[in-house]
Image 1 (cartoon, rainbow over the protein chains, first blue to last red):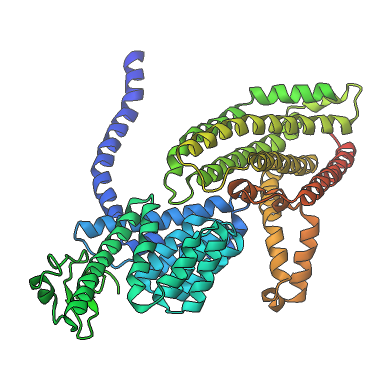
Image 2 (spheres, rainbow over the protein chains, first blue to last red; image 1 turned 180 degrees about the horizontal axis):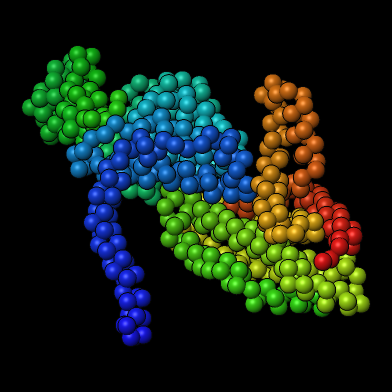
Length: 293
Length: 263
């Protein structure tokens, strides 16, 4: 055989192998990516070492590892919200999310993303008020300049736990940090049964306005819309009672008598109704169908 | 000795390992994009990422340059020709160490300037809630460099007793991880929760704590990222610790190196 053809045969072999492997890769990559996309969320968030272990091995990169954990939860949650819109419903793994956020603040107790996210999600959806407040308390020890943390804690105490003295304490603290009398007013003005929604609305608009993450913003805005709808019904109900001296029997009565233009829509796809004692309720209970209760 | 420092620096700039590690610095301009993932602390995240990357690059430089500098000389029998010159083995060793240390310092300076530009850029579009404390960031980078200079002293000590590059490189990495964790382990065994451990383990942990270099003291990242005030006397103590500990390591290294048989 001539030396040139010998040389040609020398690179033809590897070329053939590369081409074959490239074809194989193209064939494999679609089902492979498909498999990873559809892998259950639980698996995706599951395997994270204990915070103590992470602390030991992350050397001088604790802040980076802490933030990475938060971003992990955020991506997971963002994916979940996307899925919800596509009508594919999966129960979110709140426990794993909470675990990761706790690990994150152990690594970096100053990380605001973790506290903010815990407050955005854990209280409303999981109703873990005590856990959230403990986390906020822990954060306050470090982020002593940050009014958000006592503001969140005060809100949890007032709105969810109905512990008004504690709530007032935290609102005062937020007021001291900012030098803003708004919080002191909040503590006094809204801490009665009828004012609960006002409190929640002012709180949620604060959170939603400062949210940079789309998934979080979407969740908060949805909740805010629902509460604003409740408030509009409550206002109509109060005017009706003031004028007639009796409670309206149903929302239809309010619409027919002109106090309410129309029955507002529940963003959680339920429908509003009035309880016999006049309380505004919704069939969705502020939870989207398919979400964990 | 100054000649050795100069030769060391020149060698590093020509080193292929150095060029490879420098490529990692190309990630720095990507930081603004990554920082936007944060919800509430975009600027803080950009500082975190910058400092983390600088620290990581300096770690690689310290381990590979510190671990291979002496070993390569001996492997290439370069030491013979150098040691025939009228300098002591001790000053040769010190020259090599100072060369690498000076280089780390310059690398930190350069990376720090790029990082400052990155952070400035991010804070322009996402103003942080608390003003950035630049002096803290400078201190954090400076102490990072000092920490890795101490690590180079560790790798020099390993190089003097080793015949291959395995001990200098992997030994140095192990000391780095252990030296970062030692404070936490020490705090744990002396806490309420640690009292359940057997006394032997607890005294071992305490012994290691005093023996190993304590790198966590050099970590000022939290102060830089969140503007937490620096502790002046703590910084002075850390500097004193660095000088004495590195001096001890280098003097041991000089003793071992002088008694070593060169084949």
